[in-house]
Every structure is written in structure tokens, then in C-alpha cells.
Image 1 (tube, rainbow, N blue to C red):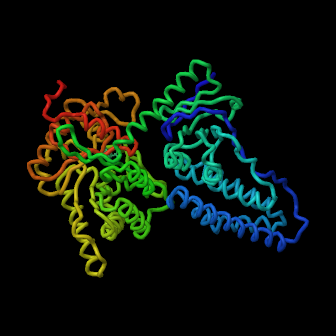
Image 2 (spheres, rainbow, N blue to C red):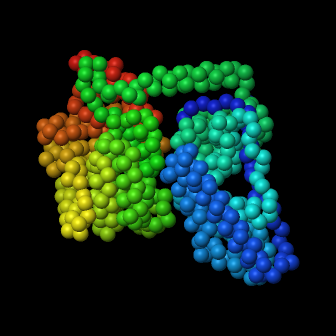
Image 3 (cartoon, helix red, strand yellow):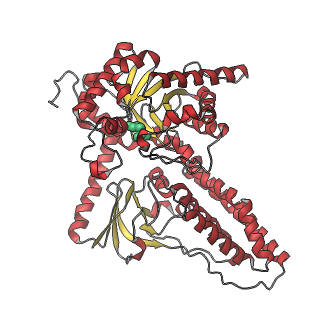
Length: 546
Ligand code: PEP
Ligand code: MG
């Protein structure tokens, strides 16, 4: 028995035989072509055409079986196949009388390596995409197909899984996914979560193991157990059963109202990163989206997304939520979230530095693009716009002025904009919490970001393991700030929610209710659990001592 650790990518427990998935890229040996360069060019362009139609078919299948957002990756693959540098490099090799296979193989390796060498996770993920399209072209050119498909249920173990692999595998036979590569936001992780298949990614040395026996995937803890002994197997079978039962029991909370035992209503909403995550929110029937971290759109893109792309993304989410409130937070980059296309100067203390609203107010073109996209999308649902990292009143004033300015601009141009957009702010800096009574008259709502509020209040870096013990969102100092914020909101007649991780802390729920928090926003997978806990609370009961 051997236990490997990785990143928990999709919750649940899978048990079954390991199935090592290693679709070989067809071998290509360096040789000069027997054909003319023109004939090789011809072969390549036919392969390219076929690759495009294969990708169209995959796009269709994924749109139908998962959702159009998940299918987007195959559109990206098509765009990559049209990348001029990529095509030029292939053309160069062919004109040096190499075979089309060799031209594709060498180009693919070079481009994939170049991307893999970059520090940025998003760019590294693109490297896998280059390998994926290269493998596709080589498969077509050499006529060699990938390995025989899975025919019995198994746990798919792979060095990495390309989106096309994930989609081509027979879903009903895939018990779980384990990969050596990947991160929480890699495509496999996102697809696994969307499909509800347990997954652990980033398991180092996975493919060096003997993967011939049974394997347990604990997608909630990020554990992979190879050749488990009888006792572990028995334990996990029980755990799997109780997880299933729990999910089944919790499912009854899907269509229940979010209320305490004595009838106090709270909104239990969900946090999302990508537009596709909204499907999951709809599935669990959350009361709305309490936080869409719009920076995901910026992080996962080779350049800042333009107004149209953002408009499409926000509209999609609003439409999916069909009239329920969607709080979209404006761009919060900087600190630990730096997209590759943004050349940020080095900072000694980036968490205290030039991030979120601070950067947006300095980069007005970037900010206005987002505000215009949000305003345009507002007609598709019930939009709330939220500004992050506000630490002083002037920042809020300037952000609101820019928003009003963008609205004027659009209205003058005859573009429809909703008149019911709520405008709010995150309370995640202690100064904002302390001055919540002064902020309250200026906004329609507060949403408390307890992740940052805790790190700034207790001076404990949220990313630093060494001070993880000091990072405590239930510390009395943080609770006092929450209480003051909620009371200031209530005094002004606006709502106050929490969207940091501790919104899902069941032990704090009675406290949140008692101070007047009216909305909690958690990962979609936690909505039912929170709704159940809420239904068991009597809001008139005295609070346990804290
Ligand atoms: C927070 O700080 O609590 C929050 C919700 O924002 P993020 O985690 O994205 O910084
Ligand atoms: Mg924050």
C-alpha cells in the first residue's frame, strides 16, 4: 500500500482498478521527405483540415454533454492551429524538405517547451494544449490512433489529461481522475468538478508507480492510495457510502427555502470563478451568486479580455441565473493573482500594495472596459456590481463616478443599461470595517471578505503556512469587525453578506444571524450543508460563549 498526496480537485471518493492512460504521441523519426515540399504541404493542409473538423465534433459533443463553456477549449485549439508562428515554423521545416510529421513534431515540441518554461500556471497549461493539438495532427498524419479505450470501470491515472482526452473517455466508466500535472484550476480539475467525478491532480511521481492494482481516490482530501490493504479498503468503502448517503440526504435541501427553524430568512448563495461554474450554482439551486471573482477571466487569458468577451461572459452568467442576484466583483488582481500579460513592478509587500481597486483606479482604460461590459450585460438579469479592497471613502467615490460616467457614455450611445443595478463594496480591509457606518449610506450592500479581513486584522499572511495558526477568521477581533459592519448596514437599511471562506463555517452561523448578516456565499458544493445547518438553528436561542 502506498499513499500519494496531491491537490484535491473534485470531491468524493472513487475506488477501482487503476487504468494508466498514456496515449503516445506517434513516434516521428528525423528523415528527409521522399516527396516534394509542395506534396508535404498538401499533406499538412489536409491534416489541418481534418483536425479542424475533429475539433468541431468535440466542441459539439462537449457543449451537449457538459456545457458550452467547457467546450470553449476546443475553439481555443482551433485558434492555436491557426497561430501564425506555429504555422510558419511548420512551413519552415517543410521547405527544408522535412516530412510534414517531422515539421509538426519539432514545432510542437519547441512551442510546448517554451510555454512550459514560463513561470505562469496559465501559460504552462497552454503548453499541454500545444501538445494536444500536435498529437492530434501527428495521429492524422501517421494514421496511428491513441491507445484502446477504457472498456471496464476504472480510475484514470495519467501524467496529464488533455481536455480532448477527458471528453473522449466513456464517462460512465470513469470512476475518478488522478494526474501528475495540473492545478485546482486546470481544465481536468474543472471538468471533473463539472461532471461530479472525484479527482486529485498534481500528484508528483504518479506515473513512476506501478499502477496495476486497485486505487482509492479521495478527492476531498487530495489523497491517492495505491494497492490499499484490506483495512483501508474497508474504511474507504464505508466513507464512500457515507459520502453518497450524505449527498443524497443533503439533496433534499436543494429546493428548500433558506430559513432558520423559527423562520428567519437568509440568502445562501454561491461563489464562482468561471462563467461555467454558474451551471453548478443552478444545479444546487443556490439563492444567487454572492461573488463572481471576475479576475478568473483575466487570469486565464493571454491578454486582458476585451469589452465584448467580458460582456458575453457576464451576460451568460446573468442569463443562467434567471433573475436571481449575481454579484460580480470588479477586477481584483495583484498580490497572489497576477496574470501573465500584466507586467507588475516588484513589491516588498504585494498584499498591502498595488492591487484590486487601487490598480483599477490607476489603470482607468482597463477598468472602464470592465465597467462598460458589466453595464451592458445588466439587461440580462439581476446584476450587482461590487468593488474590492476599498480602504477609504475616496476610492469608493472615484469608482462610483467612473461607473456613472460609463453609464452616461453608453446611454448617450443608445445602449440599454438596467436601472436596477445594486452597487456595493467588499469589506475586507479593517479601515473599511471600522468606518462601515460612513460607507453604508454610499452603497446598496456590503459583502465581507473574511479571507483578507482576517489576514489584515491579525497581520497573518493568508498564504504563509508558517503563520497559518494565527490566521483565524473566528478571532474575536474579526468577529467584532463583522458585527460592526452588519450593524452599520442594518442601521442604514442595506444588506450585509459574507463571501470569504468562513461564510461556510457552521459554528459561526448562529453568530452571523445574531449580528444581522443576511447573506452567505460559499462554494456551490457547500450550499445544501449550510441550508441544512440554518434550518436547525433557532435564532432566538442564546449564543454559545465565544
Ligand atoms: C476575501 O478576501 O475574503 C474574498 C472573498 O476575496 P478573495 O479571497 O478573492 O481575496
Ligand atoms: Mg479578498
